[in-house]
Image (cartoon, rainbow, N blue to C red):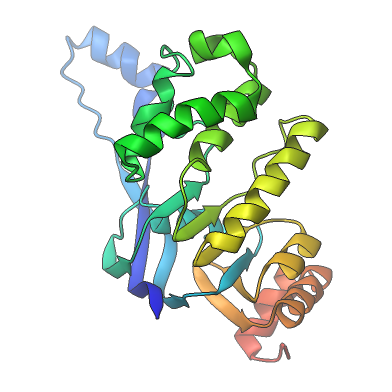
Length: 265
């Protein structure tokens, strides 16, 4: 059964020209009584380029590729944070996105107050929210800080709270980015155990990581992404080995090899 169907999807980001904010423009506008009108110009950067992809029940998908290859955009797309510029996408079941540590958190709300909204957005029931309040306090070990606004939290405390919230409900699809680095070793160990438990119950996983060992150990299939497209899709060890080889060649040599269709995988 296909849980995720992505059909010819593109995602574009507008990038605006900041020249209209220059000091010269501001001075001329003042001297002429505001008659100098500077219009912002923009270009679209394509983060995903006509991507077609199916993810089925039981698959553990790893994403590799250099920064800007489209991995994070794909995670945000599946996690419901972004929508396609063009193309069609269908995701079946509850998606739990662990992609941005501050996603859905309000800095003026307490830890307790921040629990309900993200869980509701993930489709949690009233009973699940009630259980989560008790369980999250115990797991994060934040104690009295749970009654304080999270603007008073350290970076590590925010990560602990966000991670606990995102993992408080059982997912059908777990979308995971690598952002636990701000936490201490003891919490990372607890978080790893919690993730392993979630993985055993999730129907599918989509994981982006710079750790080749994590990708090869946790995934059943790996996608190598470049320029918003999948350039290789297959067994983890085979794809990771090809990606490492490309890194050794250097990106300019890789591009030349692509252009000449001489890069053997």
